[in-house]
Length: 162
Figure 1 (cartoon, rainbow, N blue to C red):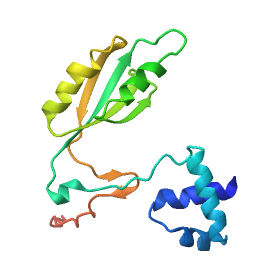
Figure 2: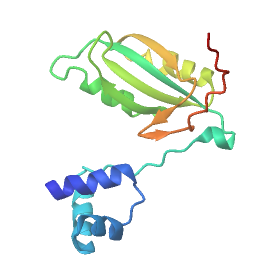
Figure 3: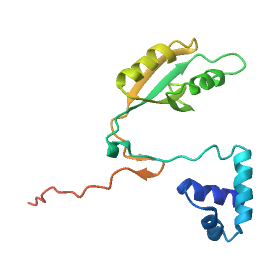
Figure 4: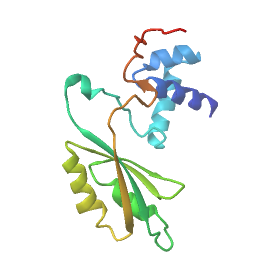
């Protein structure tokens, strides 16, 4: 299990890392790493491989919103059935069960703010278990999944001393 954790840690930092590189770093043969990855994928430990893209640099507009959702839990299943239902909407990127005032945190992607508003009013709020929502629009991404989007700017203010 320790070797699997090391493989996963390497892939989490760089999903493009080759099997050969992983094997070299961990001092293992490539066939062993290939077998480990196949088993982790089969067991659904590795669910997929993502790329973090700075769409702003390509001039691609889009809107991301984080929606806090307060639910009425269902008998026998709590929040699970409602969270799974919300997860199936194509606009939804992430769904988390949270502690605190709201039960779920839902991350949604759309082309415009109107798309997000339509999602909340026509899809999310129409679910019987949903009591209330609070929508927060992302204005700027600074860091996502350990990737910083912009290098820190040099402080250009004049130094003033007494």
